[in-house]
Image 1 (cartoon, helix red, strand yellow):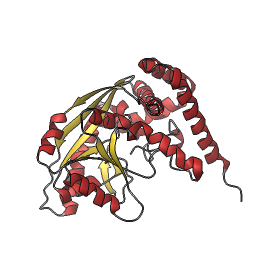
Image 2: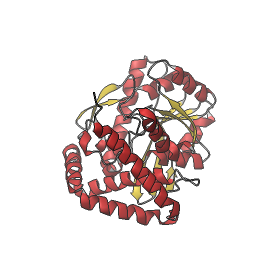
Image 3: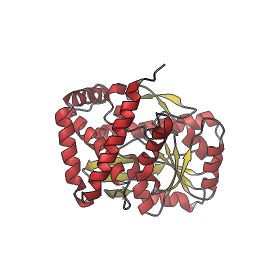
Length: 321
């Protein structure tokens, strides 16, 4: 029986886009990437008006009950622009010098205080803006991350040689700024042993909390509905005794970002594991909701399963991680 053609066409299109983008950015000066981002965004938005309507409607539906009154069409346009810029950034990251956006870093003192205790730190990340930006910011500040990643990160939805190659290209913009990428395997707990060892070495571990792709997800109330959240970060913090700090990023405009590290979430190791996870997730979600309400255009979660229809994804890129 013949395999469906559509996934192969999508895979081929992704390779064409990446290859064409790489060739173009080989001659396009990086200092003009802001102009290029604006041009790509204008072209995309002019040719995808339905995307704007769908995304704006989803934002309005979730945020108006929380008292948010805004120009949701403008916010949807900004969100799409941000995601398109990530694709450009990842392609730029395939070059020798990598992607060099303008990044402000706030709250580094919280991380430094945590590391001064000698037990390492977990950055419990939120899916805001481009995933590589936080990695770039921390590496340039002298704290390259040990990042926990799903094997499905990138374009890892397809099999075969081409399907295995795309995630490698997708991750190129990140890997040069990481100390280590640790993959969650379908079987075994080797990844957990590696993370515990790195925390004992006083390293900084990066884990996403709002992607809902973990083995022990917890269903929690979020923006008036329910959503799965990964419980691994607070469980690991309880076991290791390390600090658990939340971090999010705000898109300020073409090639401009602000990464914010917040105060640690308190972890009482004397409590039962399920109680620690529940309290930590409540605090995480409270912070996440506040940041989304303040900067809705910067949250990537509008495009994930359960928020918007799968058919409305902006690009061929995979999940954050």
